Image (cartoon, rainbow, N blue to C red; front, top):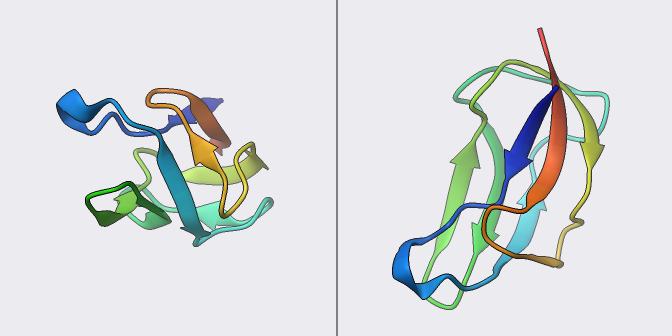
Length: 78
């Protein structure tokens, strides 16, 4: 089980907003494949998966905010 964490974008330490998930629960993802798009006050950015596996849980829905380094999804590794 791999915990996907919300990125910490440097010194601002501000919450991020999940703009879009590119995978749904039950879908397979490859390492380095885009997993979600996030934004904060300064930028929008795609974030890639650090592992290959199946998305088993999405804990922060699109449009919701997450604190830096909080768990936002779970991937069951291959």
